[in-house]
Length: 210
Image 1 (cartoon, rainbow, N blue to C red):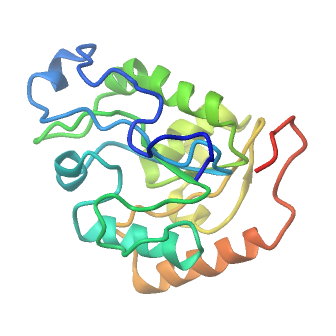
Image 2 (tube, rainbow, N blue to C red):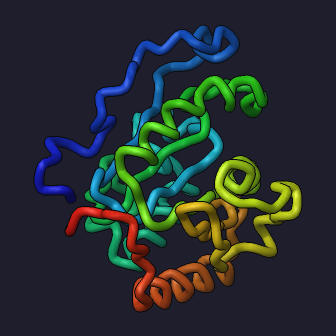
Image 3 (cartoon, helix red, strand yellow):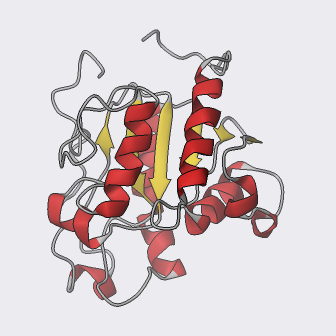
C-alpha cells in the first residue's frame, strides 16, 4: 500500500451522502466508493455494487463472486488476505465502480453512469495507473469508449478476456465478470496477469516511484 495512505476505504474522502441520482439514492443502503492502494498500477472497474459489496462497503467483496475475484487478486500477489475478507489488504490494486450506488431491482441507467463518471475520473486521474481492468461487459464498453479510438461496441468481454487492448494513456486488460467466470477462464486470467506482471508494462508518463 502507498506509504502515505491512511486507509484503503474511500481514501480520497469522496461524498458518502451523494444525492446526484434520485433513482438510486432513495433505494440504496450506502455509497460504495473506491478501495485500495492509491499508488496502484492496476485499477479494476466494475459496473455497480452487488448486494454483498453494498453490505460491506468494499467493491468486489461480500459474496461468492467477490471471493472468486479476490482469489484472482491473491493468486497474482495483489491481495494479501483471504478471499473471504471483507476488508482485503490490497497492494498495487485499486477497486472501483462505474456507479457507486446499487438499485435492488435493475442495472444502472446510462444517465446514472454518466452522472457518476466524475468520481471514477477523479480516482483514475489521482492514481494515474498503468493498466485499467474492465470487469464485465458494461465496464469494458464504457472504458473502451473513454480510452480507445475504436467504437466501443466492437469490444466483447468474452473475446477480450485475458488480453490487452492499447488505449489512450492506458492499456485495458478486460476480465469476464466474476459472476460469470468459469474455472477455466479464472485460471486463464491468472496466467495472463502473471505474464503481464513479468513484462515491462509501465509506461513513461511521469509516474512517481513506488
